[in-house]
Length: 329
Image (cartoon, rainbow, N blue to C red; front, side, top):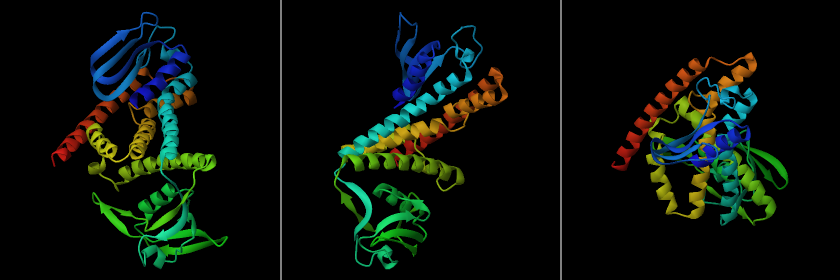
């Protein structure tokens, strides 16, 4: 996933004839490296698998190189900056299509049956055969969207809009059962939806809406982290993610691939956050330059990114320590 991300930066830099000094996977000391005789670019694999980078001339300093990054038009630098995240999102969407194709069934939003007699949502007014159109004010198209909206918001009664016998009906204050995981309360669907036979059309539809739903889930999770719904204990770094991936890999290929999709899209979105040292932070400075028609002093921008990378590394150390303690917990 890191390789795909850095490849986005690398390919667009080469497209615009920008001088690339090094293409690295991993951080820290070099384990393996080779310099291209033709381009002079150093390709390396580094010791710590927590990131990677494409080092370009004039990236954080002034350069006399005629092809340095700082001499390129701002729109080209913006393309190079967002290309890494864009590659993650594109690959994530492609892999989501594979997830849908390899799934045993495709779920719609029509209630086939309830999980048990006198289910809470059935008592609240839902019926077998109802096609759920909206959860609250949110339009839902597929089963995963429906499950996510209930999971996130179903801790309180929800207004559910359904298509019943060809008519649109709104059912007020529908209740769902809840569970508590890691101190966080979530809603649960208490019905089974109708499976659909795979066709080219619904595979494309499912792939599109599942991708958009995953982007929305990640974005809302970041907001929940900022607003305090989730705390540090719900965050994971490379160690925690490896443990989860290992566990999911024992389940099924489809579940494993879906987790890869989530992490890939998450990597793309996280890198576009307007934080120093991330691609989104660099993009903010480029937008400011576009508006002002002159760049921010490289020394000031470099200082801001340096502070940002230090803070991110400190956060990673804290999260990694928590993950290691959880492994022994």
